Length: 413
Image (tube, rainbow, N blue to C red):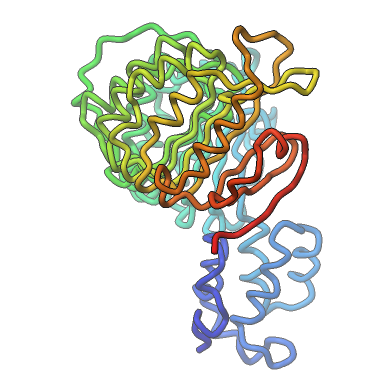
C-alpha cells in the first residue's frame, strides 16, 4: 500500500483527499503498465473536469471504471423542468452512489408544473438514501411556502441518513421570507459546515419567532452572502445567531450590508469574539465605514487571521484615489495580535467624494508598515485588476504607487 506521505498527498487540497479511499485493490491484476491503483487514481484525477476524456478512459480500461465514474457522476441536477414531460419522469441517475454534489432546481414554474406542484421533487426524495456520497447540496429557485408541508417535503426530511451527510449547503434564488422556513432548512443538517446564501429578492419584514427552537449544527463554521448582487438584509441572521449565542462561526464573508443592519451585525461580531478567523465586508458609503468603526465590531476579534475590506479605498474614473478619515480610523481599530493577512479591494466610483484626500494613502503605508501595530501581519493584498502582495517590512513602498500597477513582491527577513 502506498501511503499519503510517500505520494505527497498531505499537501493536496480537499478535493484530492479521495485518492487513496476508492476500493480498487480487486483490480490490481488488470491495471495497465503494472502501476498500482493509487497511482492510476492520481493520474486520472487530473482529468476530473474533462468529461469527454473520462468517458473515453471508461471505455478503454475496465479497471479504470471506479476512478472515471467518480468524476463523471460527481454532480447531478434534479430539475422541475428537465425531469417532467408528458411521458413521465426521465431515467434516474445510473450511479447515485458516485454523486457528491446534488443540485435541486425548482425553476419557479407557473404553467403545467407550477410552483404549487411539488410532485417533481417526490421521485428524488424517495431515492435520497441512494446518494450515500453527497456532501454538497445546492437548492435553487424553490419557493419554501409551496414546498413546506407537501408530501415531497415530508419525504425529503425523512431521509435522515442523507441529511446527516451534508456538509456544504448552497441556497440560491431562494426567498428570504418566510424566514422561519430558512431557519428550519438550515437546522435540518446536523453535520452542516458551510452555508452560502443568495436570495431571490431582498425584502425583509421582521417576524416574531422563538429563536431557541432553531439550533443549527455546532459544526457550522462558515457563512457567506458575498455573491449577492444586491444589498441583502441580513438582520434576521444576526438577530437569530445572537439570540441563541451561537459562537461556532469562524468565517463570515459578506457583500454590502444595509446600514440598518450594521448594528445587529456588529453586536454579533462582538459576541463571536476570538472565534472569528476570516471576515469580509463591502462598504458602499463612507458613512457605513464610519458606523462600522464606531460600533467596535472587531474589537474582540483577537483570533482574526484574514480580513477583506472592500471600499475603504476608492478609485475615481480619472485614476485618482480616495481614503477618508473613517477608513484610517477603521484600520486603527483592527485587532492587531493575530491578523496575518489583509485584503484591501478598490471600489470604483464616478462620483466625487467629499473631503477626498489622495495623499492619505501614504498614511496607510506608515500604518500597515508598523510592525508594532501589526506584529503578525505577513502580507497585504491590494487588488484592482490583479493581485499585489506587499510585505509589512516595506517602509519605502507606497500603496498609491502599487495601485498604479507597480508590482512589488518582497519577503520578510
